[in-house]
Length: 255
Image 1 (cartoon, rainbow, N blue to C red):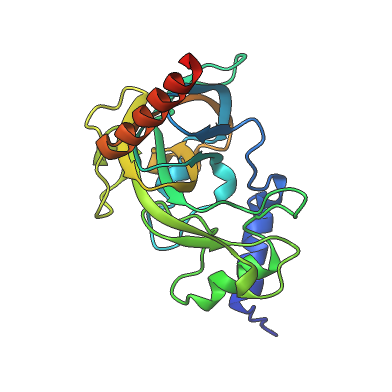
Image 2: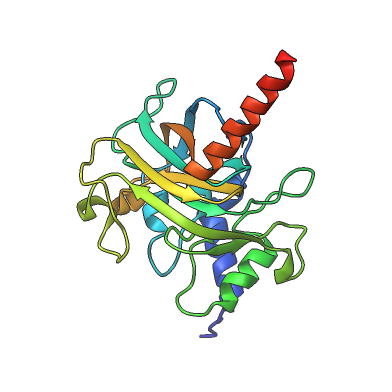
């Protein structure tokens, strides 16, 4: 009997196609918190969904995770600040709430933006990059606890990949749901909401939100609803600069 041995690249491409990875790509449509220049109120983006209840947790192991099981958000800071982010599971027009335990990872950097083609796990350059890393065959490009790269159908070399630099994460629950991978610090209570705070320098950021139920990988990809709130508090030095600028502007108006 003749046997056929697939290359790692072909194997990964076939796996991604089988899992339906081509159904969506990384984008920020309706998930842009905006640019923070000082004094803005908290921003909530409501009625978004994630595909399945496990997308974030799946990215904590050695074979990475499928980025299509998460939703990407973005924001820009024009000054150093502490950012607080809360993700809460919610019903969304009758979509399943069920067992969603939200989790997210925060990164410096953005995916390719329109009019460029969107990044996705199954792009040829993404598959080539993942194959070049060695080790076990990767399920996708998403890494929940570290840096990662991904590309689009327009990419031809690794220089064309989008890069995400890990800044931190927050996960709902305990290792009873998200597993025992080192480095995960859950909030200790699996109640459908999680909050984290991060000190960040000025720059562009991406937030990837998904489910923290590692064992949920066998339960399908039905959508779960989630609301995400972001608030920004300037550091004292930045706040002083912003206050000084405001006072100067007010003084000029009085003249």
